[in-house]
Length: 477
Image 1 (tube, rainbow, N blue to C red):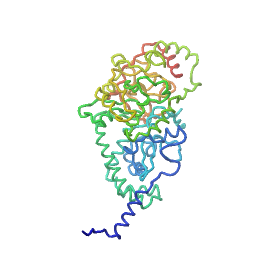
Image 2: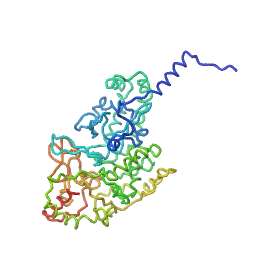
Image 3: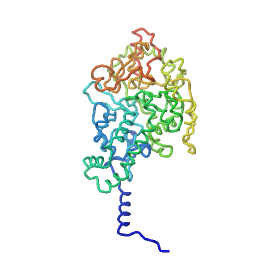
Image 4: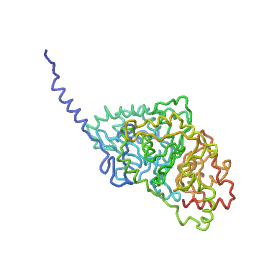
């Protein structure tokens, strides 16, 4: 039997083209990679393993806010800043909270800093101070997902338009890179975004999450194939801080106290951000875990604290707050029943017994398999370290500042603006009303499902002088 051979005049060049395409390394430039020698830089820009599942090819990611500027939210800044990403002048030019994985097609993903680096300004027009470990008060993760979906659903998301935009940004974008992007990277990126858009269809049945907040566990229900069609619970909560994790070891974590392992909590957060049990970079995460064990929050400016009033407030704090919120106290890290704390139940009800059981199957066959998840009946009492930078307050971020939190629920604001990072030194929180907050911020309504500002009435019966003293003491936590 004679074997028919392909013409070498056709096959050889095609094979060569294919091999060269596979060896192309599309890079973002120097001084970039999946890890960094400095722990702070690694936290801001290192990879935890999200790129393969939810990452985007670098140059596509780079030009999307240029090609699709009309799809970005109407917020201050340029490009990805309008979603809430922040830049700090790093030489690679990526925003904080993005990771970079080199390869045949370099990918951009998200990391821990996406949710845990925030900003503060002393006054309008002053420079931003970027604070690691602080809740990402400006970041709108849902808006990022919706932006990508809007891009992928637009007919402009095609090889010719994207490659032309890339060439303007990178004149050295070569022939083989164009080949790889045209026939592989761009079609696959579009298909991947559209597939995730279907997975995120549960967004449409719930109020917008808005900046500084995320629904942590409804994405897990989608991933674990639980029944979201008949589940309308709203799991949206404020992003937490990451300070002083050593003292939190053994405490019940997450807003509802559903897990008491810091390490397991960290892995579940990385998987929630887009990693898989197989793609998790455990060594990279260990560096971050070790660093945040003793990461301290910034202190409230000493010159803005009334020392004499603070002394009066300390005794009031001990009587009203310490048993639930001081490290070593009886109730800290424990769960207060929802019937007692009386805050919005949606997040508590969203984490079901079925989900707790399913969460404990993640990582099967691995030494770190999840085993600590449980269903609770309330919300966890957390230490108050850096409380001044954790506004807005309550688990759903429904109270703009500490002064408002000390008022009865019916006297708290029903609407205010989030994501404006100028600090309100009078009320201890961020400026949440007025023309500037309205122009730069995003409106929050406590009338939406999951956004109630009810409950946590502790301290609300104090007289005005006692509240002022307590507020002054809370600045020192």
